[in-house]
Image (cartoon, rainbow, N blue to C red; front, side):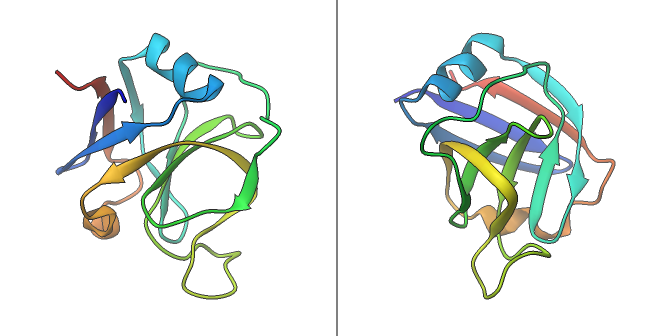
Length: 124
């Protein structure tokens, strides 16, 4: 499995990519630089891709999931409940393509403000 590095504000994380069409397109397009938006316990940011919703897209996601939001379009990192969650689990606004997972503690993103610089690169 390919790995990527996520730098969001002053937080650095590594993530593992899944074997999905979305993950493959994102890997081909790296590196990205963008600006973070915060929505509850989700960070999302624009990327230069416009991809279709996959057949298994879903709104119910897990803490640490990386997903592509076709309606955005945006790259999403989930680390806790969002404004549309009904409990402690994250929930996307609308179906997303889950393409990866943070390795380690995604809750480190809790204090990152909107407007923080984001960099996504392939891990060496």
